[in-house]
Picture 1 (cartoon, rainbow, N blue to C red):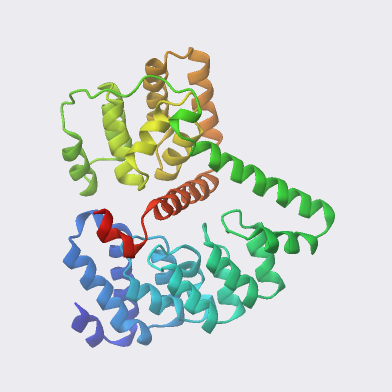
Picture 2: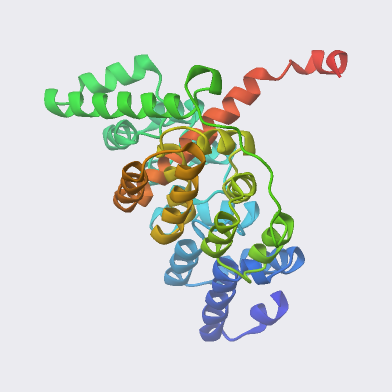
Length: 337
């Protein structure tokens, strides 16, 4: 494939590169690992020969794709800002180390794009504030997913007009309180009965395999598991496709609120009907009145997908930080195992 693209006349090369990018962006479920690697290599090897407009389209198509390789993402991220902005803003293939290196080497426009990512760790945020101009600093301050140190936050807010500073302070405080509430342990609040295992017509492992191949939509799997009244399997399904630990998902399912579960489902693209079905099964398990179930479903339809994605990313980051803090130092690991 790489040789085929490279040997194409220039006027056809860009068209073929765009086709390859489409396959990576939309055909992941039907591709095996070797095919994904090959398609990434094709684009990486031909990128320098492509037109500016083609590079921009590829950057837009692959920005949020989990199939984009780190090598290809870094090549795209090294292009001029008008091409690379989507990759810098969204690509999960770029690590924080990659982004920090790019921040040190690239322009203010690159920094501006990085500052708009859904989640920015403390070290990266501090670097952006150090290297960035006033516009970059404003983007970071308005990014509720940026982990800003209290000292930097107070300094940045002081630079804003009073009302704007107060509004941002309130939003950030509310955001932090919500995340803390969603991650509270079971012992810190009242929860419903534990989930119990039930038989399903199709085992959850088989559902996941079919889902990965694109043979079924997530809504269909979720609805069927709800019809089986198997909330434990629902927890396994949601954990697998969201990256949130199953224990955390199970905890959210037995809480007497719906915010955490709604955030995850909205980010995953679960439709209103499938979510409403899940609400009914949860409500029955928790023995809640129909009015609460209706309220959960109504609030879900009003939840903004971008806000949900940001909150989920923050939840995952907080969980990862908690896991890192709980791990023994490397020099002690051999003693404790």
